[in-house]
Image 1: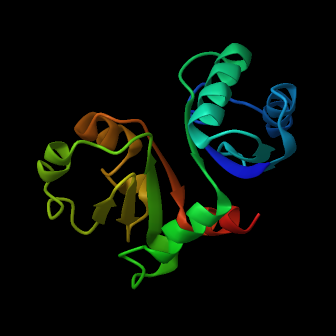
Image 2: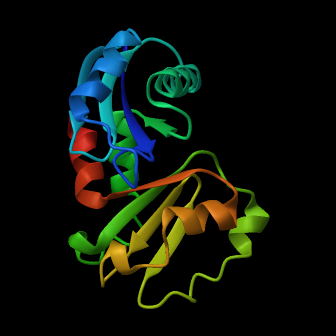
Length: 172
């Protein structure tokens, strides 16, 4: 049994409101163990057997059947989330200004190179594999570096969490 953290895209934003009790029940109904949610933004910690790829596919299918289409799923283990926190190339900035955008897959190198990382001041970002590290000194809500921006430019699903949430999920 492996502990996984599911970071869900399109849960409790816009028109899709999902109570956390309903989300926990959906994971229990899919057969997962020790299901916990963290805050209202679609973070689920649970136990499952199988590879991350197979579990993510099963979660995606189960959530689509239960809640409808369009929910993206990124899976990490708590140890992987801890490594994401430790590898943060922007860690010298104030922690309250830091976020991580989790990508559904590794974007094409050509798409990454086509972006101008200096064109979003005062916001700063660095892409590392399936993670985009963000420093948004005026707040993420005012940044142009949104999930939609990265999805459009990189051609992959994206979901963002603040660094405090990522750190907490790594220790659950």
